[in-house]
Length: 315
Length: 309
Image (cartoon, rainbow over all chains, first blue to last red; front, side, top):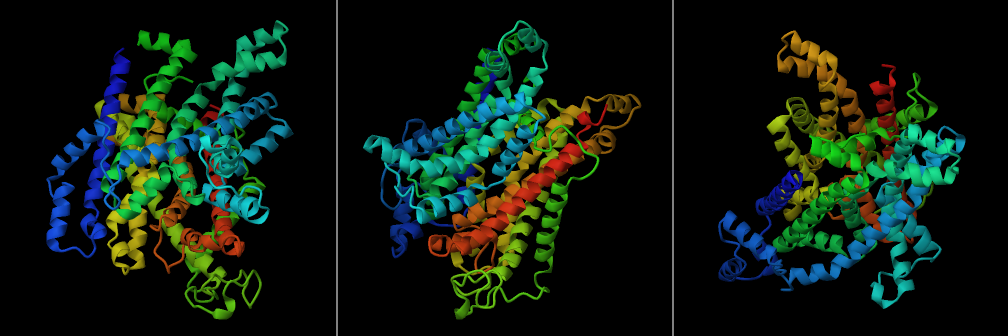
């Protein structure tokens, strides 16, 4: 219980610090929203705009107001089109979540069998070859991969030409539109996950209980998948969880490169157009999601590895 | 592997860092791959350093005959971009800005993050908690967002259009350096934690050495290879980060070329003139590959756990 309380406190601190830093950075920025929104307005109009948007209030008052509203689900409005940011986020979030989830699932689907296989065949030529490929994949920046994929697969060979459509509007079009972004995002993760699982699996396979299982005549398949995989998956899980942060960063780039209407695109617009409320709310949201995911993962360990539960209660 | 007492994030980063392709087999000699990687990095760094005195065309000179000409055409080696500027010389000068940003930002991150990581890992306790929360906070905002916001914040040049090229490079160094700090800091902290528990540290303490001496003479030399290895990986990430920022229009200021802004500039003509985009993309890929490989070799060579303890 104490551990959970500590993590919850940490969660709150992280979110407050994160949002405040973004807030301070935004304030320090020279750009003046009033000039950006009403470029030909009079000084009076600008003053009115600043007053309406509470931009002339002191720092902490502005931050406090924003935080209060945010906690009630009100993310403010965009300056130029006066839309609710929460509406924009609601529209964009599914796209990003789909992108990240698909990429995560695809990466794990390829990485887990590959990791188990290379661990089983550790030291052989196949193992070395797969590792070399993984290393190459890891070194392809998303930008480069996106450019190569979109040139060959959509511009040249015209295989994936569909733009993004929501899941509801047709499954096959949806998949068509998502293939390239998802692959771009997943490729780097495949290599990371595979290598992690491989090194943990190799360690597990040398343990006594594996020798025991083998000596009982249990098939290799069963030993690998039922006995060895679970204790080896701890690091993988942690990384997969922590990677949501990396994936969010990656998703921003991928969304911009493939023009997907997701949170990344919103964020890019917010940065370019100096939209304080939008930028801040989105960043706060991402920080919260990130910290909560980590928190849940920590709880998940306890389920997966009972030794942690015992060791922690002993400590 | 335990997940006790230490923040899982730091554990994971060490785990990630340990799972490299050079693997557990530390070699006494550098392999062919390492030499190729080293050769490529030296070539790129050399042409970046010497770009002004190499027999290259002016990277800003616009020649209509060269515009959108492919590789080897119109008297060029790597063709010309849509403004008729020589691609080869732009790539060399682009290496100059891209590498400046990468090296500068990682040095900055190493100095700040390394110092904080050493302090946190060696002293532990409250100061460790404080620094760890700081790092956790910094990594809970997407790095690209912090960096982009910082670049926009810190460079008046972006709003006024003018501004000097050096200015923007400095700003990029600062922005990417700040986001690199927690990553380098966490690795340093994790490595320091491990080394501080070793017998020779205890021995030094028993002899009555002061903390500062122990940190600098006993712990730091052992942590340095890890920091160096992660710095090489960091540089690779920084090169890509600059390219990402360039996509948002907050990379190196055109017309000064960088690999990132060359991609951003010609991205629209990908379908018609792919070479204009693929050339800088290939430079990024090969350099990242080389840096990653070297980082891995360094890690494998200096990892004591493999050194026959």
